[in-house]
Each structure stands twice: as C-alpha cells, then as structure tokens.
Image 1: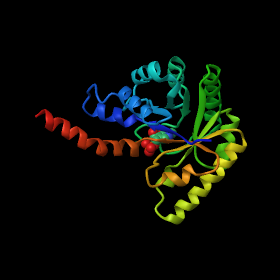
Image 2 (image 1 turned 30 degrees about the horizontal axis):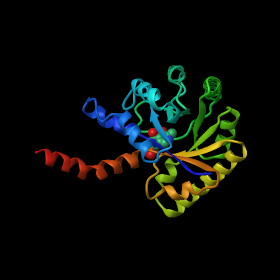
Image 3 (image 1 turned 90 degrees about the vertical axis):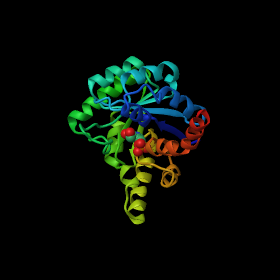
Image 4 (image 1 turned 30 degrees about the vertical axis):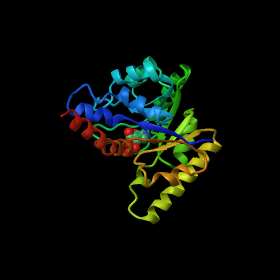
Amino acid sequence: MTLKLGVNIDHVATLRRARQAAYPDPLAAAELCLCTGADYIVIHVRNDDRHMTEKDLARLCKVYRKYIHLECNSSEKMQKMALKYKPFSVCIVPELPGEVTTTGGLKFTPKAFDRIRQMTEALQKKGILVSLFINPDAASVRTAAKCGADIVELCTKEYSEAKTQKQQAKLLRELALASLLAKELGLEVHAGHGLDYDNVLPVADLCGMSCMNIGFSIISRAVLAGLPNAVCAMKELL
Ligand code: PXP
C-alpha cells in the first residue's frame, strides 16, 4: 500500500487573514499541492473562523470535493456544514476555545461518545468517510471502532514535541501499537500533528499507516522556498 499525504493548507488562510485580504487563495494552494503529489487537501474549519471558513470549504468542495478532508468539531453546526458540502472525508477533532492548535485526541466521555457516534452515522449515511482524531492508546482505538469510524488519525503531537530520543522512541512504540490494533479492528490509520521533515519517517514506516496529514511544516518551508522567486519577480518588475 502506498503511503498517502494529506496537506493541511490552513495556514495559507492564516496569512490571508493577517491582512484581511483576498489572497493567498486556498483554492490556488490546493491546486498547487494536488499538482505536485498531495493525495488530499486538509482544512480545519473552526468555530472562530480564524483561518479556513465555510466559504473556503464551499469553494474547495465545488472543484476538488473528492480530495477534501475536512477537520471539524462534533457540534451540530459543523455536522450541518459537512453534510451541505460533502467533502470526501471528515475528521472529528476536539476544539477548545482559545487554543493555538488542537491540543490532543478526542476525549470519549459518555456524552461525547454518543454525540460522535451519531455524527459518524449521519455523515456516513451521505457517503462521507469518517475519521476520529485520537490519542495513540488502546482504549481510544477501541472506542473509535465502537463509534463506527472508518479511519483513526493518531495524534503525533506528543511524539513531535518529545524532548529526548528515549522519550520519542517510547512514544513511537505507543503509536506503533495503536496503529497495529486499529488495523486489526479494520480501521484505516492516519497520523498527524507536528510532523516535519526531520521526524516524519519513523511514523510513516509504522506497520498499518496509510496517510500522513501535515500542515505547518510544509507551509513554513513553502514560504522560505518560494521567497527567491517572489523577490526576483518583483525586482524584475522594478
Ligand atoms: N491533524 C489534525 C487532526 C490537526 O488538528 C492538525 C492541525 O490542524 C494536523 C493534522 C496538522 O498538524 P500540523 O499543522 O502540525 O502539521
């Protein structure tokens, strides 16, 4: 099985928002990513619309629906939005007010479990694949399977932020075990959060992994890699 890459382009919209401008356009970014090898375009629509908005989802789904992987929380509002635009897949993630970025996997309290299971069913009925963003532990994997999810995305935040090699190796083993268990339970396995050019390969090599979802490191690299072109173009014009 070939490993897939989902490119999260949220931070293209972060830049647009910084100047409240019409560019850079996420649609153009999606096209560039898909033309150069991305298998999916990942966008996270948050309650506060801080980067991607419902309008972005609508535009992206209109052109690239079968490549769009939407991340959102489990509220009725987000469910309604997902059902309206029908992206290829939806990853349900926790969302805390004021957080800089997602802080970890879903917490399955009994109430949250019921809600996530309901939302999973509603999305699947309309042909949308459902992924659950979970911490890499056996209990979370088993609960995700009980929710009826198609996919689990294992949270690599702790792994990415490990301070020592020993700690990172331990966290990688946890990811490996969670991936195996998920595969055994018939789930497709993705991983994401904090992955970059230095730390991605050990995760990508884990048995059962089928997709890496990566945003910040790719967009950060793109900014620097694209600067020479951008400066040359302006200099030529002048
Ligand atoms: N997967 C999920 C569920 C996320 O919430 C995020 C961050 O939006 C990512 C992957 C991508 O993380 P990063 O931007 O650190 O690569």
